[in-house]
Image (cartoon, rainbow, N blue to C red; front, side, top):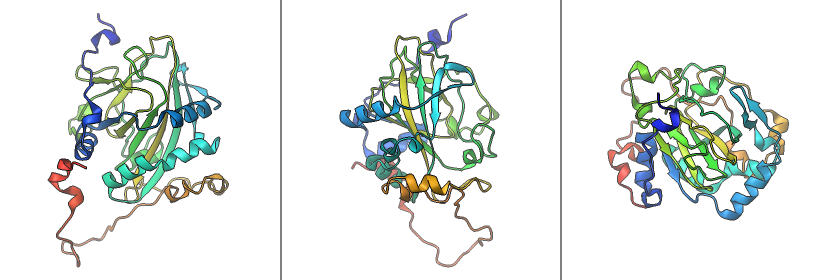
Length: 285
């Protein structure tokens, strides 16, 4: 019987730098994930890495060697500022066409000996114990900022492309898988950002190397796409501690925009919606 590592033959090592703006949007909408190399400058990366190493971490339930810290923005204003990172904000505002609402933030570190993370989704339409009701938001993108290189032996990201589009019961968002024969492994360099559609099945391979691999993960949603029920409001004392640049993204976490009683022919309907043009993937700039 082959080991998990021996079965991984599909590697996505495309030239990510060559993607146009439209191709980037297509990648996250259609494939469910996107890598943008060198998204963070070396100097900023060094600052984030140094600040992250001061965080107090705890072991995850499946391994003490998978360490993490929830809400690192509450421990460090430098880490909090990443929520408002301008290149990410600009890209997501174009992708969503709406105001951004910050959902959650985590720091994770995979140490040598960490087992692979099971294939799973972060989007669970009725909520869950792990993700709470924030997981029920219909649209969410997690941005994973890698502080170290992802090589084939040090917990690389893996994903089942287009799994978020599947209507088959095998893609039930509450299922988890040890592996999938068509999963793809995605190596990248430190300073890269991975944009992930939260309904896409993803995980990691084990850390079989001799070093740790860390990341900061920040999740956002468009303002209209709130959870199915109200969630706990933000702590006012936490809000007061946030840098001014971050506050525009700290709207009501239960915010959602919809009209239950909308009619078949409401007044003032538009005849244009460029954000959903099929040609949106052809943008060059």
